[in-house]
Length: 493
Image (cartoon, rainbow, N blue to C red):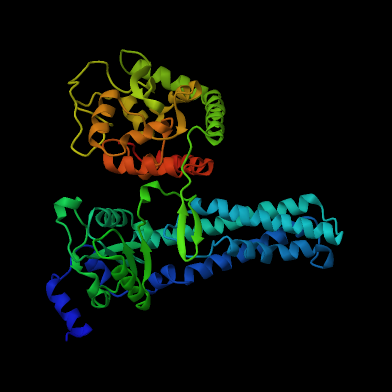
């Protein structure tokens, strides 16, 4: 009978003598920073900084009003521990897969707001009558100081992950299409802190059938213990595989016994969002799907918000728009605006507006994007003017689309609209491409803030655009708008 040690030796013989790619990085000894960032150290740092920030906010509010700690300031004294408790209840100290500051803004602001309201109630109950201005200063100070501290911690965590200093070796059960997709996403996004080092699959399909895998198939799930010893894996992701459920359940139990964090990709994941409702029926869990309704009142609010913001921006940016118009007109013969037919919500066509960035001499109009790539950017002969290069680099050429938003043809946030000929082509070749037409197209979107601009992967765009539609909320729109500010600082081409 083969022992686990013997299995490990056999696996080492099957692997390259000097692993390349992610595996080579992961088998190196981990530093103290990795243990701090991916362990409980980073959570303790958040707790410490939150506590310091909250105490500072209360202390500064009391000092501004000339108050001393005592019975008459009990609500301000109790505010820091109450806020920390509320933050803990909102699970803001738990380790998350993504370390993005914007993801925590809502829960953190909500927890601090609840704690502040509780202190107002306490003040009223005790009859202390602390000035409203003092309470407001403590509340605003807490939001600002806690936000700054958490932004700093998020930057530290993201830096440690993206530089490979705290990467967590990750094994994936299932080397099929979904498993390979998970691995590619993790490999392309080091900020998740999980580096795929290998697959476990009893009957893996070929590389060409799954679009490529960034890590080798190391064995089947029965080899888990030996593979964990070899790769020092700390995470296990269950994707789709041909293993029976009872065997996968045994793999999960074994992984938990080995100290691995286990995640899984659920069936029908394309229909799930963050509004899934968990309801147990006896010992059987049922997940209630809550789909986005583009005809609902929430989207009416979204579209009204779009038009108000677009109108305000057009007024505020009027000098900028006038200056760009003059520069475009002087750069080369031709009009100021460029109009192009695009397909929007419900398959309706409209003229998308941009500042003209190219000369009007027509080049070859038979452009076809590379296989698997979306159109965009420079197509064919580069006819950009000097002004046009600057406008495209800064995305200022997109500003006239505020008029499209004001007309109701577009939204500020949504999938980017495409030309009719490409819509027809992609709808026939790309699964779920037409889903984008359930909502209005946008000036910016979830795909764009993830770097998918110009001639980038069409499949990735479709995936992220459909994710946006399924997970839509006003909060997500505002998050995308905030990230757009940073995205436009990078070159659009």
